[in-house]
Amino acid sequence: MFTGPVPQDPATTDLSFAELGLSKPIVESLAAIGFEHPTPIQTQVIPKALEGLDIVGLAQTGSGKTAAFGLPMAEHLLHGKGVRGLIMCPTREIALQTEAFLEVVGKDHKLETVCLIGGVSLGPQAQKLRRHPDIVVATPGRLWDHYERKNLKLDRVEKLVLDEADHMLDLGFLPQIFRVLEVLPAERQTMMFSATMPSSIENLAKRFMRSPEMVDLRPETRTAEGIDHRLYLVEPDNTRACLVAIAAEEKGSMLVFLRRKVDADWACRQLELEGHPVERIHSGRSQKQRVKALQGLRQGEHRILLATDIAARGIDIPIIEHIVNFGMPDTVEDYVHRAGRTARGALRGTVSTIATWQDKEAIRLVEKAIGEKLPRCVAKNVEPAVERKTTIRGRQKIRRRLT
Ligand code: AMP
Image (tube, rainbow, N blue to C red; front, top):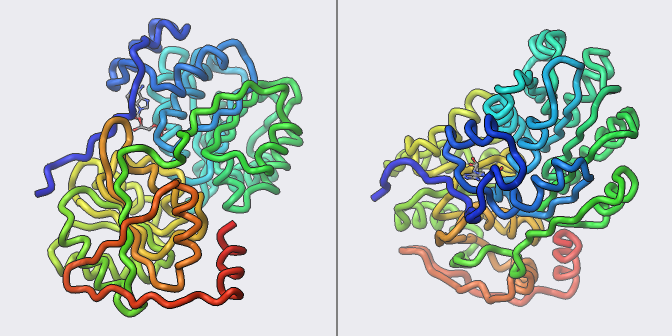
């Protein structure tokens, strides 16, 4: 049976926040929200960030990055001298979560934070910008829109954060990021966080950062320990039946990734009919609906959340017991990243992938990356696929898509 709210505890260290150099009011505000000990990324980043160093932090989603950059920012900035903190994030959800965190820890310095995200009208954001915010949290496209309209100045920025930089690049935000970087004061602290370190991220660091300190907390195995991987190889016509069967068999919290909005809509209707408490997030849903869906999952109102890739990127989903890939993810990185939504801290989790024989090459690449063979599983009443050989051309095509 599903048993109430989903917990959200990343693994922490035995250190205290005070030992990292944070002041009493900040430590107290952390205690008030239940942060007693820092996570490994916080332990490593906070002292360096307090020194004003540039930092490249490599860590998975859910490792506590927001506090790692947010706390030193709240510690250093005082209210009232223009926008001095700028945080760029890939998605609206992550921007809203960052803003909410800064509101809590910035209280003592009366810091004003404004969140600039797409999908909502510009007017109210422009109005908030006129009230002299100290920190702006934004998705790059919307930030640039406001800058071009002269709704905000960026010439006083002292601290810049690029959060989930690899995802911002995946989403095609590089041009806007470049434009913003060109107009910021050269004299500033820059912190960049990313789950992976492709050459594009390395180049960004070389070009726009001052000999950054590297903090690399990527797990060696690439996916967290404690994950049970499962592969359901089915005929293309049976993928939907397989999802329904998995939802019925597994009773814990479940996050399902789907490529297309229509699949998310279909699955939502179908799973509801089967009696499951379910919600969905995709780009066709309003901001309010997405926030509500996430809150509902956190508070245990629904057990299953269906999300398209883009909508799910970077969101702070609490610990999920079961991740389901409805279709093989587009890249190995995506597989690893999605798997990172489960088995956080000391907990165990399951990642089930529903795939067809056409995904054979993609499966091989994922198996190579995680260093183990994905155990083949069969869902109740769903025939497994008859395995076929992939042609060399087919294999090359898939490899190009995945790498
Ligand atoms: P983040 O990686 O910043 O999105 O954080 C992931 C989740 O861990 C969020 O739900 C945070 O509220 C939570 N979290 C971050 N740091 C701590 C901490 N030191 N103690 C307890 N929870 C934390």
